[in-house]
Length: 144
Image (cartoon, rainbow, N blue to C red; front, side, top):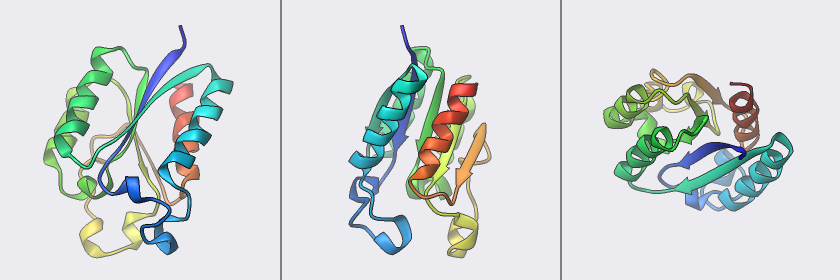
């Protein structure tokens, strides 16, 4: 059986490609998922890729990742990274390593993005690499 990694995407990431492409790029979430899936095959890893605009779904999926024995979680919680104590706590509550991905570098953006609650609990943070950050995170997860 191949190693499993969860890839969780938060609010508004379903709009990638059309939402502020000058900031987030022109790649859609489906295109990112296809690239990840293709790369995962070469690594012998299976991915469970999900997206939700709802905080509770992300928390449930973090718990599920641990419950199913996933090797790691790659998460882009979107704006919840800066506001969600609950997602921070869920990341801390599970033993499964969690790699946080940000398409941009929040520290170079608006001041309200400078506090990153999820980053405080994550095993690793990948930021400012655009869609390629997901591949960086996948390679890091494969090495765990």
